[in-house]
Image (cartoon, rainbow, N blue to C red; front, side, top):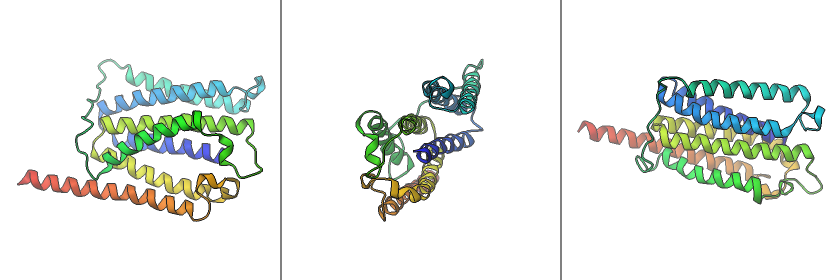
Length: 239
């Protein structure tokens, strides 16, 4: 669970970093993205609070808990400062049905409800012990990490919602490419853990590589389809 939690944190970090870099020249988009980031950092800060300091009966080592609390608090304060600036510009929400087709926006619209369903599945419907190989048990720390992963899944859903509602076609492509890259990294990282995971996960043996190939293939198909669609629209506009 430690590696899965770490990969989930990296996943969220890569998504928000890529989105921030893409929107760095748009003050309105950065303000709106900062508002989404503030919600996510607040959720993660609350998770750190409930984790607790091991010196006082919590789960996390004292120095790590203090470091996490300070880091997330600073991030939340910086984002709060951004969204409360006088005269801050805000992005206008784009129509949900505009620009759909074989492209990245459509793929993200598919991923968003699946991510929300996954979030609720992690919190209420999946027994964490089901992911472990027979004979292994979940520790108290592992249960905590499972819940942290659920919070991070919620943050991924927030990132997808922002991208769909406020970003442009290039932003959609950036997010899809980031997800494809992180899927490959995550798959390679958990490969050595297959012996500790149950067949219920569906990533034992060749199942892992099949899922990776399907996910990355769908992402690349959406990227290529989106670029071809943009080129066609540009050609029609010139005519």
